Length: 508
Image 1 (cartoon, rainbow, N blue to C red):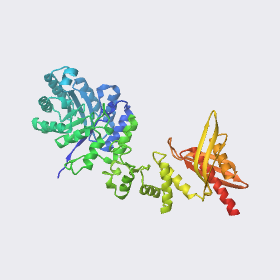
Image 2 (image 1 turned 90 degrees about the horizontal axis):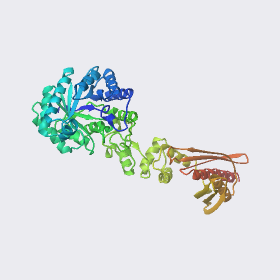
Image 3 (image 1 turned 90 degrees about the vertical axis):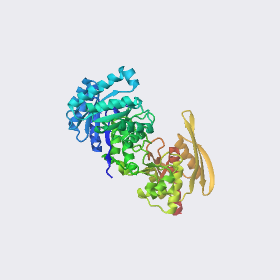
Image 4 (image 1 turned 60 degrees about the horizontal axis):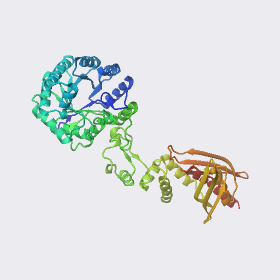
């Protein structure tokens, strides 16, 4: 079956930049345009040249330097707009003038304040002026989905006669539903007698969250160009997302078997993050295709399935959009299979008993932290590797301190199978904890060094405390980790004391 090409018209630099808070300078626009060319979009709408000198310069620079895609500029149906647009895009190897006017009764009556007949005449004249400059002319009937069908068909027919080669049917305010938008495109195909001389384009906004569905419905019914933006940027709730449109066509070939695009999908992730970085508009974590969580798995059931067969929970591969691999997010919902797999990737192949101990510590830490990082896992394993038989085991610690409070620590520990509890005061909560441990253990090693570091970043970072204590000429190093630095401090000190006691016994 011969596939029909869907033209991908990217308007990130024009409509996308109209997103509240998004602002790009000329250099940034050129950088994005070059990346769009690597992505292999068919056309780049580089800007609205008459809107500002900066926009004119950006469009002109892109037209001069970016090779491959059609370079389009936007213009109202005014001669001065069209002249300025042509001046900007003229250096491009494949320039396009894109002119538009509101066609719905709302736009005619309240914005243009002109009759339907007058708007039709202006649109035709504008296309003729643009066609005098270039053979590639696009006409948009803004707010087409709220325009009377007969009038819409008439203005499309007349603009084709005037020389328009692409006809854009925008759902400017995201009002349409997929079924009715598809029906509109079908009616245009049937009612506009010369429609075969032009490409039908669609430009869908996302006010009701239907821009992608509407665009694909239009494709099914005859549209062959989709106007979209990276990350779905655009006015209000944005435009149809390029990455969603392209990856649906690619992933659901069983349904969209007649259609194809020339997009190099392996450049999607890079393009998405470049646009986000330069515009300052973050990508929501659960954004389809390019969000941080799009290829992340945290459920134990999902992780187990992915490790056995990726297709169980992934309908496309990370590599298909330019990512190296999926992300296994280790949380309290993760299972032993995911933990074992990640530890093996880090170089730790544990035996069944070792894995059981590591998993027990993992569960304790996961109850305290939202996400477990590689550094956390290494700390757990290294604690297990360096573990020694414990004479004293910490069961419970509570400290109180403040500017007007004497620092106090209460500790409960298991001492050779018996539970012992005591409390002491100190210069600070750590000192109070150490003095309490000294009282319970009866061991008073000299503290030589105390150091604390964060194993991972964030407010819930795992803290690692290392201490050195000395008895006679012997120095013992203790280490402890916890999200609570006082608990980590107590664990480290007790670890050193256990080593000291063990050494005494081996000597005796």
